[in-house]
Length: 459
Image 1 (cartoon, rainbow, N blue to C red):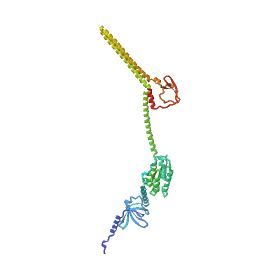
Image 2: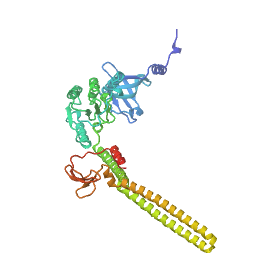
Image 3: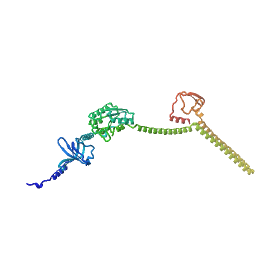
Image 4: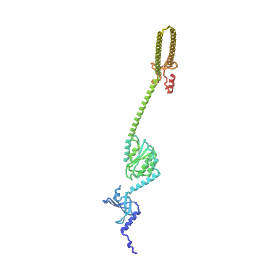
């Protein structure tokens, strides 16, 4: 059977295979060693990826090559993400590379992501497990290398922000095969001593391999098991470690971790000065208010003193007596004017038949006037006696006759309050019929209720 008419050309065959490969095979990850690396002026990269048993040609075109953060070299072990295709001109299998990274770093990054996902699923990163940081730690523990730059940065920040807090350094290596083990031992030693209120787990920046000790699972579990709050400050701001996620607080740098652990003394002093000024203003306002209230009470007490009340009653008595005298004068004047008028009328009506009637009437009027004068005088005298009796009741001498005494200093000045008196001081008590010379044996304050009762008893 002649099948020459159905034969494929080489181009058709290669193109068909290319289409099948590209359609059936997705992006793949391939690891191998670079060889025969070429960098033409176009910016593309051409190289061979090989291992001990095989090799494949690779091309990474300029748009993707320009995004590389590494510089590929012959002999470098790399991890590629690529599309499988055929280079039609030669019919060679070829990888079109989309992404390239160092194989060692890629393995570390994948291990980091897997551990992060597993610990997160276990709940080690949950915010509910994180302990609050002390507002004012009594002592700060620093877990780091004593010879590294990170510890100097931490010490500088702590000395600047709050130099009074004592420090304790738990020495450990922060890089290398033994670093994770030493960091765990330092963390456990700090928890056994219980000498610190917060721990700083810090180191400076570095590559992913340099920070690998802080991605250790055992260290992460030790940080979560710590009874002392832990602040993680590992690497630079863009670096993240497993210790950052599991710690009670994460700081972007060691210096930031130190700043997070202590308050700023300058800010605290400013707040204290502000609170002190506010307290002084409050106390000054309160003192002014109390002084005004005391002045008001003093004036009220002075106005209600018995001497002041007696003086006001005396003024009222004088006013009443003056009014009484005026009334008597006006009454006498009125009676005199009326008598003169009647006499004038009698003189004007001289006829004898009216003389007796008028004389009798005059006598009657005289009697009525005398009776009214006597009655008015008796009423005024009775009122005067009542006022005198009330005045006598308000008199200090009347108070003395009821059993009270007036306290005086030996020089005769009155004693109205206990201020200025002392035990053993000589004073005198004036009674109604004698003066007693006494000495103070005890001074006992009197409650406000007792004072009001005593004032009522005086009146």
